[in-house]
Image 1 (cartoon, rainbow, N blue to C red):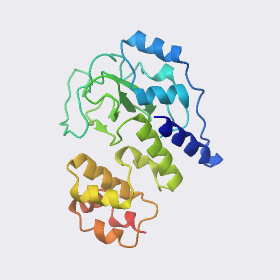
Image 2 (cartoon, rainbow, N blue to C red):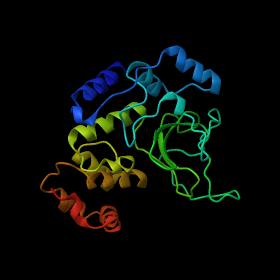
Image 3 (tube, rainbow, N blue to C red):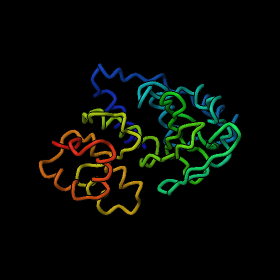
Length: 241
């Protein structure tokens, strides 16, 4: 854990000043414990380490990381039933579902909000349930199906954000659909991955990949999942070197 914390701190320091990579001060242990006692939960350790040793709220995807007083948004079905398990698990297929007189809704128990993506879109951290520690993208008050980020935990997720920024990915609005890995690892996942969710994430990552090898495009266009994704998203030219 110490090595991961040190690595993230070094990458934050390496970011150009134009990125404005500023986090709010780290939380005291007592502040975190009080939040946990109030909601009857224990935060995932990787997230706990981040907010008590690196910082909380500030620089991060979309509009940045949310501070503690916004971890439980009081709106649009993203609610504070933190001790109830989140019903979904990573790498599983999810069918759309809806209910209630007010239109389609999705339940988000067992989570806190770590990023607000605008309107009713949030990145949630699962704190209770089989997906504990994972990040999941949701649109509240909608029948849009939640999807999990591929990262193993919060530290891996945040470090991937730093890596993508430092590497010069061309459009970070795709970040929630993408995954970590070098070119060969991503190609291997795209061709041989056991889960459709991860094959899709590898394909999405190549859309903004900053320095592809000369042979990469020939490899990609032979893969049906990538070919279909590019057609759906507006053309093959996106992944050229």
